[in-house]
Amino acid sequence: MPGMWWWVGASLVVGLLAAYLTWTVGRVERLRVRAESAARALDAHLLRRAAAAAVLAERRYGVELYAAARIALDAEPEEREAAENDLTRQLRAVRLDPADPDCEAVIAASRRLALARQVHTDLVRDARAARGRRLVRLLRMGHRHPWPRYFDIDDPTLALPADVPA
Amino acid sequence: MRIGIVCPYSFDVPGGVQNHVMDLAEALIGLGHEVSVFAPADEDSPLPPYVVPAGRALPLPYNGSVARIAFGPVSTARVRRWITRGDFDVLHVHEPLTMSVSMLAVLSARGPVVATFHTAMTRSRVLAAAQGVLQIVLERITARIAVSALARKVQVEHMDGGAVEIPNGVTVAKFSHATPLPGWPGECDLGEGGTLGFLGRFTEARKGFPILRDAFVELARSRPGLRLLVAGPGDPDDLFDRFPAELRDRVTFLGLVSEEDKARMLRSVHLYVAPNTGGESFGMILTEALAAGTTVVASDLDAFRRVLDGGRAGLLFPTGDAVALRAALVGLLDDPARRAALTACGDQVVAHFDWPVVARRVLEVYAAAIEATDGRVIDQEWAGLG
Image (cartoon, rainbow over all chains, first blue to last red; front, side):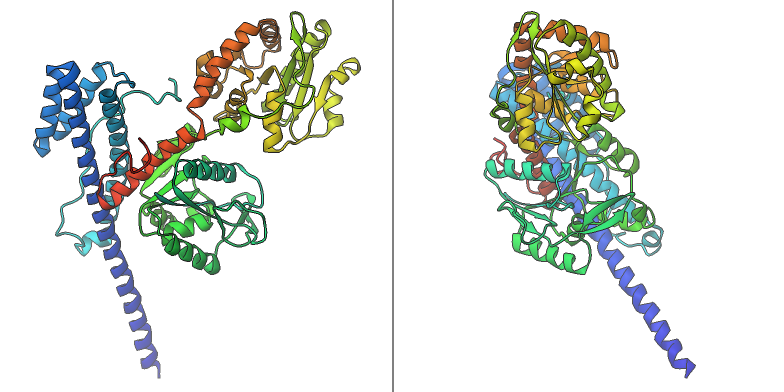
């Protein structure tokens, strides 16, 4: 009975297609969730750095650094990248002594922020690549969520790591 | 922190990645973390207590060389069991793009995954045929580490992602506390005595041994008591044929040495000479010589200049210039104060490569990976970073 084999073949194809689509939906969703977590971690590290800079400014460096830290803390989402870059510039302009605990807090916060930014950029790239696949766009998978956004700031690392002399 | 580390290559054979994994694991344990290392190895081979053997690795021709790897349903089941039982805060895999337990672990992992890329390999032929598989592996990795600037460049240019550059570490205490070989390094006075060291394959052109040979032969004729200590693979006859008959008794050949004897060898010389003419991406041996407290004389390569802090921690000579090397050797052998100044600076430089210091930087990457996975923020103290 050739008709039966036809049905078996067709249901096998449909089954495989369904499995692939289910897996793809899961993949897009998993990468989106991860990019969001990375964004929350990045946000936390931005706040930590700005807070550490504000503490340092109150004790030692005064108005300009304090203002930059305040602006970074209070920035609206669309102004935040510029405000954070401005804070990085201000921090680079002052001399930070690693032996001073307040300075060390800023240096450590900047180092952790640099890592968080690196990871966030990679994870957003993965999430956007998965979302941008043709089949995913065609079937409008994940369309209820906005596209994951890059957070485009300069590398906030303050000093070159001492083991990599320029 | 509970850390699971996966090494793709068998612990039954020595190798750079295996040493790196062991040193990192021991440094992390020393900082108070719980570490389990999963690696291919025979069940009955002697292993450190923190290693879980993944079973025997099969020698397979792979990517132009023979790799001993474990890959397949049995290995997959073992990896999964190890991950489930380990309940790790973070999984750290090495060389995840080799067909190995590293790749299996990445594909089985649920939580944060940190991957370290050692070689500057772009992509294997097997994976080039399956671009989709490569992407699936890469997108399960949360944070990437590259051990050299070159490995990092490959990440950025070919794998479409960034990586944090964290260099190889060196266990400074192992070198600084090694006992010199009996009778070495001997006397070194004004105009006489002194011992030079060379480690590596003396037949390989880019290691630059002929440059050191020329400088040594000239200098030994005018300087009584000058000796040369050579270690590395090769045939002794082949080495001694390179020296005039009357100088052969002033050359000592150790052959291939163990890690432990390497440390003793480096402690047994006044000057360690690295006359390489190129092809060095990092210069691990220089950090080891500095850790041993030995004065280093090296050719002026980019990699060496970086390790030697631009020449403050060791003397640089123009690459390939035997006459300049001889002048540098005379100057240093006759000037103990200058040698002491260079090694004092060397101590400062090598402190940045000490494993506990390097391991703290790796821990920060772990923290970043964990944070990016569930969005919480980790205290410096919790990660042992304080």
